Amino acid sequence: MNLYVLDACALLAVLAKEKGADNLLNTMKQMPVTINDILTDDILKEAGRLKSKYKLSLADSIAIAETIVKKGSLVTADHHEIEPIETAEKINVTWFR
Image 1 (spheres, helix red, strand yellow):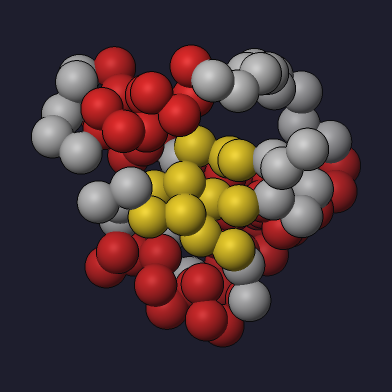
Image 2 (image 1 turned 90 degrees about the vertical axis):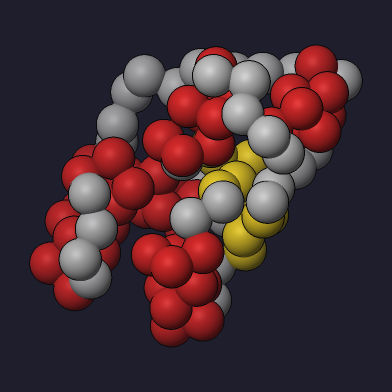
């Protein structure tokens, strides 16, 4: 099963029913959704490394760290902030806008 990690931008877009988020919401309805509220040491260490290397919010650094540690795909629409990291860190990103 594929793992998708929603960053704050994606989650807020879904909750606010923003343009472009309807496809994301429809896809989410067809998949099992798990809310992860536990941050492991590996995720926290990776988030700290990312936060110190890039100008990221704490929430984005945690979402990207979880994507890296769990080998998933980050779901976002935040091109400006994420595209440089996508290339540099070789993370999988699913763009919804």
